[in-house]
Length: 315
Image (cartoon, rainbow, N blue to C red; front, side):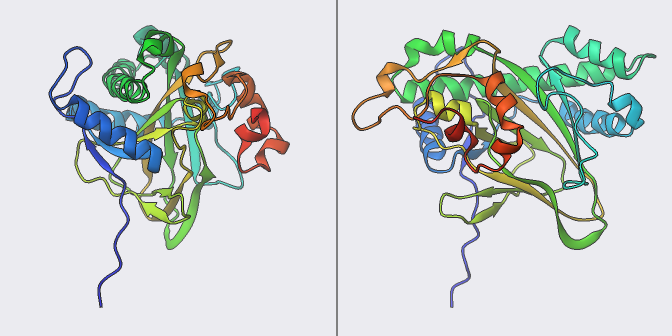
């Protein structure tokens, strides 16, 4: 009898690729990206542009950050839903996170550093900014490949300029048991593209279209998970799939992770290009403002919906 196949995320190798110069590999990788995002909504990216010392330093500063007293962490506030400190939720007791807006801009990170550590913690700002800046290139490569694949690259500049970056840093406390405990419930991301990095503690699970769960195990020290958010699904008029995912925890070690989110700017209307709307692909979502959608998403009504974007602006 054959053993059951272990489900894995598609793996796409971005090493030696960059935005500036066309590499012979570009079209091959672009095809892999498009296929993975259509079929799975995500993939494992091999990307060695983020130096190992930055990735190690990132996990170190996250441990320092989440070890701060609660009163200090609560000073990380934001007018945007889910952009500041999140924690102390009874239904997800293992989870806490912080949002760092414009994390690729050193001055913006420094303002958070000064708020949390009045005495200063320069390596925090330097590490967060360097990590976000290096990883933003992968975000831009993926988005450029998607637009090229769909034949709408003429919108590239507008598309890139319509977003900024949020780095969401997360801690999942160890449940101190071999029983599996919920880290964060199943959800889709709401933004354009998410790129996730984690320490060596596994926990991320991704749901396939047919309802099976893939437990993500990085295949390389240079691995990141790239996911499509609902806003990019809407912009591509449903050509891409935004995958449901969750975190499940077990054992005695805390899990630290960081997600770089490209997010539509407030006031920008997310709208599918006319080239992507036709008889075969009728318009799926009315134009919407991402920040207004987020406000709706965190209402009780939206939390009862499996597909909040469809409920909010579906055609």
